[in-house]
Amino acid sequence: MTKVKDIGEQGLLARLQRFCPQEIIGDDAAVLVTTPGQSLVVTTDVLVDDVHFSNVTTSPEDAGWRAAAANLSDLAAMGASPLGIAVGLGLPGDVSVSWVERLYQGMTECLQRYNTPIVGGDIVRSPVTTLSITAFGQADPSRIIRRSAAQVGDAIVITGIHGASRAGLELLLHPEIGQNVKDAEKTALITAHQRPQPRLDVLPILWKILDSQSKISVAGMDSSDGLADAIVQICRASGVGAIVEAKKISLPVAFEHWLTEEQALNYTLYGGEDFELVLCLPTDAASALVEKLGRGAAIIGTIISGTKVLLHDEKAEIPDQVLTLSQGFQHFGQ
Image 1 (cartoon, rainbow, N blue to C red):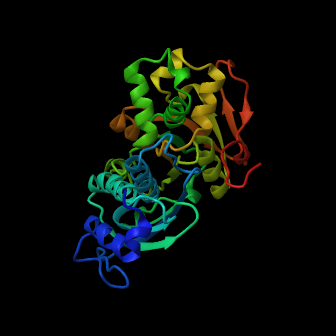
Image 2: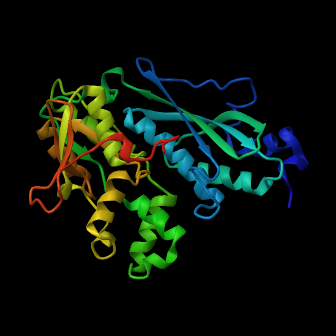
Image 3: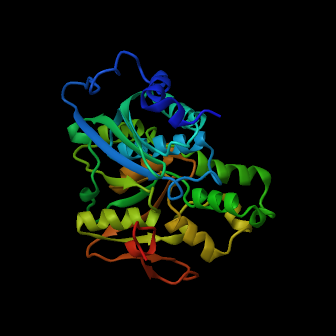
């Protein structure tokens, strides 16, 4: 098997250039043409072997897909359309060339759905495999979605089901726990983890609804670090609080006969990597958006004054609890 160290940096670059548009790459930097009157939106994600991906749970193709999807999701969360991505690779010399090519194949499979090219990057030697992606997008300056725009009275909308990715990861790590899960449901949960879908499809629907209503602001972010994390981050940036209705959050069907209520709630709030959008906007617009999206989209709460973010259950079957950032995943957390 050919290793990276066998062909060197230039040899590997020559192989990977076939994943990039030939008219864009080849110079010291890529030149991307943006539409006049649009704002450039830039985001960067760093992924590390055994932290963000693992051969135990993801093939190289799946790792590439997930990396690309994470960055496209960040663009969607800002209201931006993708223009291209640049890829930085840190590789041990003993990594196989085939593994790297399959990684790029997975990235390409995801990116092609959104007409997004790989426009360049860099390769360095590293003791651990590291993947850094910088994504470029464009957005109408009046339609950029920010975390700081939530207002008291806004409805909190999720664009789809939460908890599926975490459940899929657990099934991959511990197959024995899924003995009572139907094969179709198991496949859906594992796919949710390995091949998440960035919600760029939400934006045209959202803009069409907002075009019919004047002077509406939208706050939001994606739920890659968990649903609770997203809601708390938005509230913190906007200087507001929220009441989140636990029973209105959309769950995978498999949770009903597989997990305890406590486990299901934990996966849903803190599992992360579902890559849905969490949006705050006036109730009428929120209702119209949920109706158009379907498939797990829901209004799950309301923005209130103050700073407390409270999880509430109208039937009192789940005790009220305050949501905080410390309960979800944090790098360097204890």
